[in-house]
Amino acid sequence: MNMTSATFSVNGRQYSPPARPVVGICLDGSADDYFDAALVRGRMPHLQRISLQGWRGMARGAMPSFTNVNNSSIVTGVPPSVHGIGGNFFYDTAAGQEVMMNSSRFLRAETLFPKAQQSGRRVAVVTAKEKLRDIFAHGLVGPRNPGIAFSSEKASQARLESHGIDDVETLVGPTPLIYSGEASLYVLRAGVRLLEAGRADFLYLSTTDFMQHKFAPEAPEALDFYAGIDGYLGRLLEMGAVVGITADHGMNAKQRSDGSPNVVYLESELVGRFGTGFRVILPITDPYVVHHGALGSFAQVHLPRTDVPFVAEVISFLSSLPGVTEVLERLIAAARMELPADRMGDLVVCSGRDSVLGRTPEYHDLKAIEGGLRSHGGRYEEMVPLFLSEPLKPAYEARARADIRNFDLFDFIVNGTSAR
Image (cartoon, rainbow, N blue to C red; front, side, top):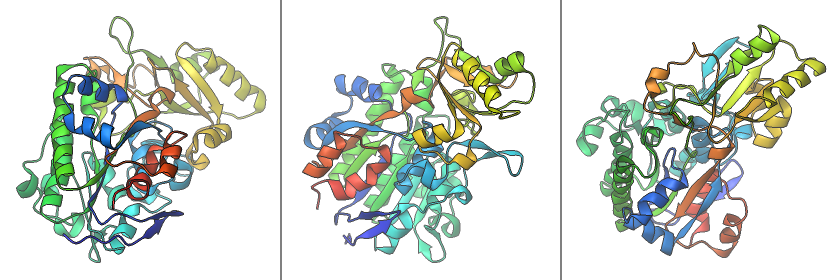
């Protein structure tokens, strides 16, 4: 397969890919503990090779540490303040509606993929979660855009005119259940098959975090899952791909010693103290409530009034609640967390490593997480792993030892390695 090394520019960054297959991978919910647990037990020999011969380190993700936010950052190369997606879910104050942010209409920056395609690369993006496909496919798939974009969740529904491909199940296998490890392994297998068939040479593969929500790093099920991932990494390396791996967020147990979810019900607390009129938004909310029960470690609060004494009193009260670690006014949070201020509440609230934020007990169906709650969204899931299959150039190695971001992934893959 002939591959161009033509340079292209997106969102102020210039990309000069090697004349080799390029594969960026986001392993959803993969805290570093998962890799350590599998590596120390010899379950990921190919990742061990990457760690020794390429680069292994840590990167800082975008806040809040949720899926839509970080995947949008990775595929645009910019923070949420630029691309506009600051959660899976937000309250549109102009429309007076709570809205899912899983559509490309919310994007304020273009993704890398159309420009990579225009430069001559064969581009494919595969996601486990259908909710991300529209964002990834923006400008990539259509009558004049021959790219490929599909999800493992809806693999059987992929059509040439809308997805750039119509034989996914023939190529990859039957559509898996979204609440399974296979939903993620299917994504990686799809990347391998597309590369083998010469149908793509510039890929982004994004998995789902069902397994990480359900199992701790040392659990046999998690170890088997990461061993499965490693098999596909080995195949990508065999085909000469330059591979970069990161995560959108980490994952932590969010429960008490008795196994019950450790929840701070913000709306209940606020109404009990100040009366009605508060609206608590949980940006982790998405269609996959079996993962997390809509409970994460980041929340937005819309206040009934915003006079300075009242806001100060609310901040003081929230800061005193056990489990709450950070309460910031809108503009301060937007600046510190690089968020789009016009899509935020009056306050941002974060909780600790072992706690999550909810609205009211009645709002959440805890039956979905009876096996125990593992979740994310706050500062304690902000740092994520970064692996590059090739050694870094000195300037990029210096950057990686300072403050690399997970959305620097493609910059490091195509510009920062010695691959050519």
